[in-house]
Image (cartoon, rainbow over all chains, first blue to last red; front, top):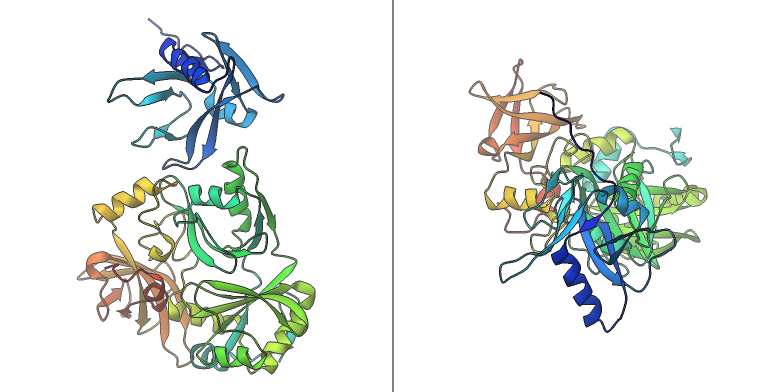
Length: 117
Length: 337
């Protein structure tokens, strides 16, 4: 029997739990609409760190994805490191908040916010 | 003896013995223009460097300098950088030939940050001064001796230059535009600084234990075994390589320690050191002193890295007698054991 490896989807997805919290953040910011900006920046133990922000609109050069009603904007360089990532939310007292399932990450640091490819 | 060097500077040069003596005991100067120099500007530059390197760089007021290691996630040094805040930006000294590696590394980890890194190695020249009489020579031409890790814009022979005292306090760097290098060099010589040839500089570097990329540190070492603690902050929080460095410190996992050594004969970099037939370290640099003795640097297993300890150079009758490297002692925090 042979098994086929499914190719990673070249997009960024968001779970229901994460989408709910993003909408809440937009509301808390006193806005009716907003864009979830997902990015990467240098730093953290493993070299790259995830960055989340709420923006008014996406930049012209951004890759824009809509999932679960949330508009996600990613700059082109960050997208190289984030393609295929699923954004989740882990709530509760011991929850980690937003978490990233990134198929490009070969290594992550203990706190989970920094990764290496 | 007339000479021409990479910077295009011409002038009289002392012999190796005289140059070494001046660097060690008088006031000596070597052309170090082959050192990499970068100019870094941009409002996000310091924050990015803080995230990517080992020292605390949240604030670097003008005139202040700091050592930091640009490290990989597994704490291998990309390079040891000396960052100095100058008007509107930073001057960054890299290792010889490592400026492009530093530029590339920073570029890889620059996403939306406002930062511009310019290689100014070719259009500038750099002289390293050392010796106990350097402050007096600088004073003769109206220049301050400066505290460690400080730099200041100065004028030498009507030429704008930067005077920079390094983190150890053992060295002063004078950086000027390449077209002005001759005039600056001549003015320093006229102030009583003895020009030293490259072989005198290398002997002095080894004698004080100034680590060199590719010898005492590089992609097969970690910054702790190379005694670069003066470039590492233990309380700054997350930075690239921090997890590995914190683990090495917390669990005392550093396996080797950079030591100075005097050799009883010849040995080449890469020669193995042994104690009781067991591996004890590796020689990283060797340079003859003017008195005929051989100075060396070596990465030595921690258990054997004690001043006065004698190790054998494998396959020969040469003995290496260990000592603490001056540069490490001058830059390490006092509580480093």
